[in-house]
Image (cartoon, rainbow, N blue to C red; front, top):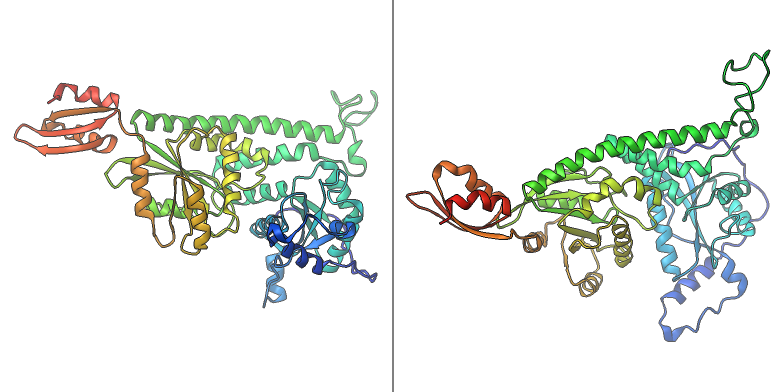
Length: 494
């Protein structure tokens, strides 16, 4: 990750560490997996319910790495912390496991993870002052230099928690922004990420020492300060920073709007030629780019990492019947996707809202794929893509639990299982795409002279060919085409 900490290094302490409640965690998981008949509500003691619960299996401790190699990697050592407000213990663990995957994608080295059971996050320190002190001991014992919270912290929560744990504190939103900043490659992607980062940063600016009260003005006519137009009360340093950030945000919005215009022109050109469009949407790391490559041979970057694709890729594809359409790969979604990112990437996500069909890709090997579906649909609602027909593509079916795949197929009426890796089910998906794409409205029969071969080619690419016969006078075709092409074919009506 790109964050840096100016806080002093803390050595190990000799006071005894608090109990980590491993036994309670095992007991709670067993309780959450039991049937309704086996449990009778929450029967834990109050102290047990409030204890920090360690989540096992999150550590990404490197094995067989020399000290020199480790220094070259320069990974941040992090402890994860989440607040469990609803659902089962397994739900809370899955959420923290996803946070661990995000942290690894950002380049962090996960040492430990704990969960605090609360009705709602503490308004001051997120997990409560007493648990924050226990978290400080966990940090000291593990040697971590960063704490990552599974939620968006207010500026006050961030400051107060850092004051207690004495190391840098990062929330889920900042972590995702950091990943986006690392993966953005295009000019538009970089501008969108910068805008989202500034929107996040603006309310969290804080002054250190004298910088909060340092002013531009000061001094009378004899002052040797800033010269003309700088005397008087002036701005504090933090006010100046905020003004500059707002100016940069306004400039970025103008640049993104200009880039959006260029993409709109290309989209209008496709509409003018009546080329149907299909958008691939889905949870991050569900296999969207792999599916695009399998369907089109595009050669787009495929990486087993969250948010490997940020810049939309549009490729031309063809149905088994010969109809051409465009296929757009889009940025992946995640639970609690930061609002700043949704706003900044709105122009890119419009590719989904303006499409004729959405391929909603879900990772069939995920423990709870239904949560992925719900998270993506929430973002699709935000960008106005609620009325676009949707096909749920259950990817990674070759490594998924067959029972999970069957459960999804029963729950989703327009779903099919595929493997972008092996190619299983892809032919069936292509046939479904051919069926679901909007069909041209006008049916025509025309005898096109052989001198007008380009017109016959347009019927092949833009329309749906029903029959074709080569005669002495020309090519006799029957096809369904859009209104503009029907008008051009009218003089050759048979």
